[in-house]
Length: 358
Ligand code: NAI
Image 1 (cartoon, rainbow, N blue to C red):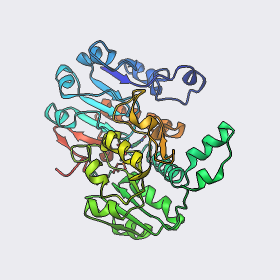
Image 2 (image 1 turned 45 degrees about the vertical axis):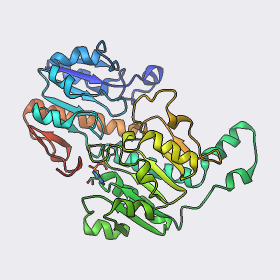
Image 3 (image 1 turned 180 degrees about the vertical axis):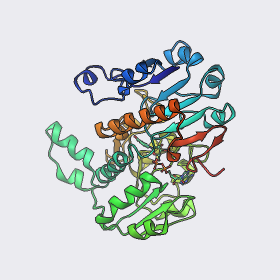
C-alpha cells in the first residue's frame, strides 16, 4: 500500500533531536516498520496548492497520515481525487482538517490517537490562564528589554484565586483542566457541554454545568475552549457572543483557531472587552505574518499570549502519538479492531460523539 504522511519540517532541530518524531526528518519513526511490511512510505511537508506533494500523491494514496500542527486539509474536492484512499490517521487529536461528512460518504475511515496529548494541552491551558491573569507577557518583556516599571505591569495583574473559570467542552482535555484548577481555590468552576460529565467526575472537581452558552460566558472571568472544531463550533465565539462575556474577561483557546472569529477577538482585545487572549491554534496554519492575533494588544499594551501551535506536540506527546499511529496502522494491516476511542469516522458513519450533536 502507499502511505502518505504530511508532517512539519524540523530542519536542524529534528536532526539534533530524534524525539521530534512528528517531523518530516524523523517520519513518526515509521519508515523501517512500513518498508519491512512491503509498503511505500512518502513523507512531505508540501501541502498547499495543486503542485504540492500532498495533492500530487493523494491521487493513489491508500493511507493518509496528517497532524493538526501542519494540517493537510483534506477537502471534499481532494477526497474525490483520492481514488484509493481508505484510511486517514491523525497523529494527534483533532481531525477537523478532514471533511468528515465527505469521508462518511466515501466510506473513508478517520482515526486519531485519542488521549495522546490531552495532558500536554491541559498543562498549556493552565499556563495560558496564569500568564494572562498575572499579566506575565508584558512583565517578561520589561525583563528582557532592560525596563523596570512595576506599576505598569501590576495595574493589570490579578490572582486566579477567587475567579470564576469555565470550560467550553468538558471532554478529555476540559475535564483535565478542571482537575488542575481545583487547588487554585477559584470562586467557581463551570462547564458548557451537550454531554454532561459523569456525576462522580463532576462532584470530584466541584464543577457546575451551565446549559445556556450566553449565560455560561456571562458568569466566567476566564473561559477556556476545549471542544473540537465542527459545524456547531465554527465561529461560535464572535462579536455577538463576546458581548455576553464579562467585561475584561480572559479567553484561552487551545482547541482550534476557527472556533473564534479572528477579527472579532482582536477587536474585543483592543477595546478591552477582553483583557486577554491566549492560545496556540490559528484559523490558518502556519499563520500569515500579518495575522491580527500576532500583534493584537489590550489598551494597556498586554493581553496577548499567542504561540505557534505546539501545546500538543511536546516531546512526551510525540512519543505517544507516534506509537499510537503505529498501533492504528498495525491494527488496520492485520484486520484487528481499532480502539473505539480512536474512531472518529467508521466505515460510512461518524462514530465519535464529540463532533457535534447529530
Ligand atoms: P474530546 O472528544 O475528549 O472532548 C471534546 C468535548 O467537546 C466533548 O465532551 C464534546 O461533547 C464537547 N463539545 C463538542 N461540541 C461542543 C459544543 N458545540 N459545545 C460544547 N461542547 C462541545 O476531545 P479532547 O481530547 O478533549 O480534545 C478537544 C479538542 O482539543 C480536539 O478536538 C482538538 O481540536 C483540540 N486539541 C488541541 C491540541 C493542541 O495542540 N492545541 C492537541 C489536542 C487536542
